[in-house]
Image (cartoon, rainbow, N blue to C red; front, side, top):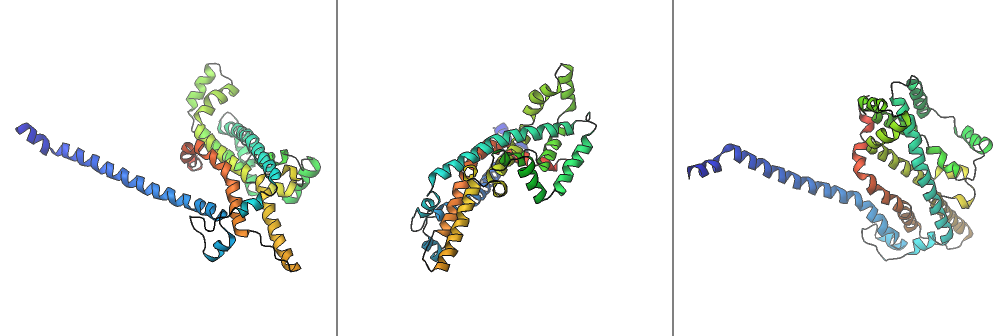
Length: 308
């Protein structure tokens, strides 16, 4: 009897139980806070979806809401009036993103790995060259002349892929990540007979999944959301990516509105719902890729802050 009473009043056991209870309460509070933050982050996209299927009049008079008001698909009908062109633009964006992202990631990883190795005596010169291009560029006109007159890439899919094959900031981030890999592990691979290529693909790549996944996501977003490159170098609608197609649709809608006012005609396109529908159509596919790399993203965003 005395032993049981002593166990109940044992300060060590009481402290341990209290610690467990506090830990459970802390996890519950943390989960509730993170859930609220997640809902708050998701709320703008829900509002966009609701506005895209609402009427123009309801949005002007009542405002935005998480629930569609005066349900209407006029914005989607307006944007999809030429469905063949929309599907063609989606295909172009998928091809450009599907080819450019892995190829660019491979190119940047190879450059970054070479820069991270002490055996490469020109690593500082290459790093300075890459950093210099982040501060200064050749200018828009020389770039346009290079692409259109010398490289002859105008109105081709290649011109949509080339700009993001090597981004200086992403290369420096990968270099920082590769520097943290144990040098002893790479030396052991070389002693076992691995060459540089085999070491890179069998040792470095598997150990660098978080960094590569993060930069890969950045590359996918850059390719998918790029509208400025086709604005400069694409004139044929056959090669319009989806972002540039939607950009031209909105511009045409504004031009039609001004022209109708000057001519005294009443043309009332769904301006606000069309813009919201444009956002929904453009961001939908890229959201599907995020869950596959989400677990690496938190670790990856800290790469640039690691100590050199």
